[in-house]
Image (cartoon, rainbow, N blue to C red; front, top):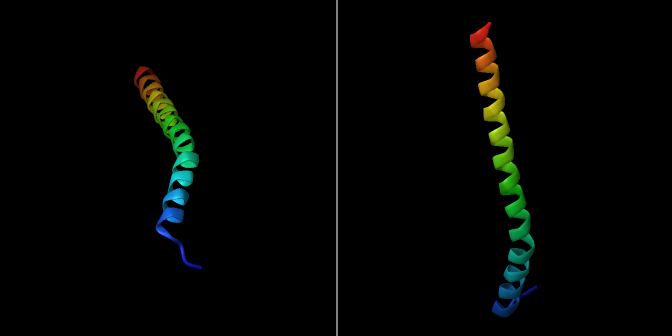
Length: 51
């Protein structure tokens, strides 16, 4: 099956429109996980230092 350049551009635009909102949510979720992990690590280190 041959793809013309126009169809390739349309397919790329559709993939970008679907992927951009999903990647934004995944990126935001990634920072939440990292922030929570760092907070947990600091809390564990703090409690180990106080005992």
